[in-house]
Image: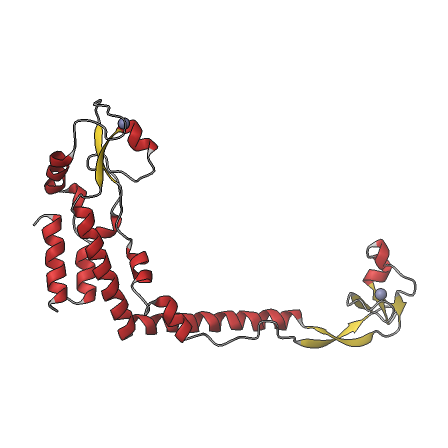
Length: 240
Ligand SMILES: [Zn+2]
Ligand SMILES: [Zn+2]
């Protein structure tokens, strides 16, 4: 079977229900690349002209360049909906999470400047303010030693970090769960069916060689297309 016959066979069996969407996908996206087949080389030899269609040069090598590319699978999934993944996410929003939750803790602070950089001194049985004693010039102040600090509510940085870690883990878990539910849903199956129909139809057009022209190497390099030189190249990756 040449690549075109193979494609038509997948299409027929898909539409008759002989292939599931997943089976059709796996047939479509595996197997030999069309441009590695003898059929492709024969088509190319049949269609390539003697001269460059842009500049008229007959100097080899001349290439048969595709001026149109079939849609990628990813793009086909996006276009083959709704329902598609974006639609599913809108239908199943993740719960809002309180990322900016304030968690406070009572902390000793300097009674003069309010800094939390205070330390008890064992020997003199008092406290000092590090900011007031040896901080930046604008932070320093007199009376940086005092018998007792004040106690004030300040953000508990450790608890806040831990709260955010917990939220991130929970968010990832929910996102993963939502993705799995999507994959197993009838809507996702319909999305893949639509996408594979689109891919098959675009691949048929690609394999018809209707969007090709003969170019010399320098014109091919100048024109803004992916092109296939003999059997190299990776264009048409979506047709497998
Ligand atoms: Zn040319
Ligand atoms: Zn202070």
